[in-house]
Length: 133
Length: 133
Image (cartoon, rainbow over all chains, first blue to last red; front, side, top):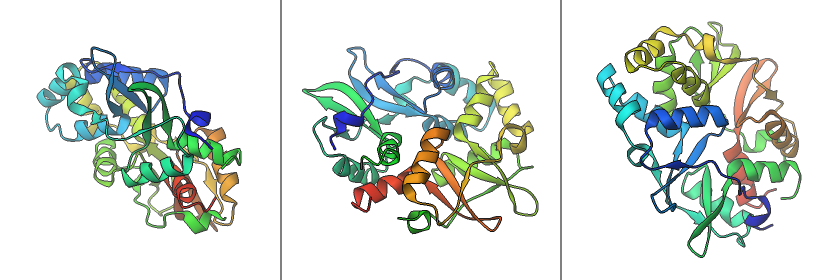
């Protein structure tokens, strides 16, 4: 099975200059667990997950630091830089191995340098559920 | 393949009467996105995820209150009660279906009323990567 068959293409994204408070609102409103972070040209530069936000929150020890984090810290500083990608024609098993090696929940799917989708561990589980893997 | 073949048996837990701040620290330290919640007798009564914590944080607009809210709120107040459980002998495809339909990232494995493990999406992705499924 190819990545293109199970990847998601309708993505919620966030700008790299948006604040942590913006990301929290977007994550909770849309019910997704992570948002691809885009630069001004619309290129994906990283991913901001609920886990990234909580890890940053856990490093704040007083209200001042928390204020700074939520209201003035841009995505660029809390996101996980975009490390691993997949190609739409790649085999899902190979991509599953890469996710585990890189310890990531999801990979961006790129074709000719453009972001065309995201494949997550949930998508692979869904394929197993449908016994397509 | 059975759930018991690929589940993790070392499971970090949090107390129902612990503060949400403690749960945040454990979630961050363990690099997990959800923890089983146990009562004083060690019985699992719920699950708390990073999404539950973000939901709580998003309800408060100012940073002074955000710190207080994490200290003042107990895990039992925001956990999801009665989490979905699975039998160690269940088939992995059925477990994947349960995750998919319940829109959950992990299933707690119970045997004879005790928590014996956790099956996460990563465990299923690992089985796919190893061509075991």
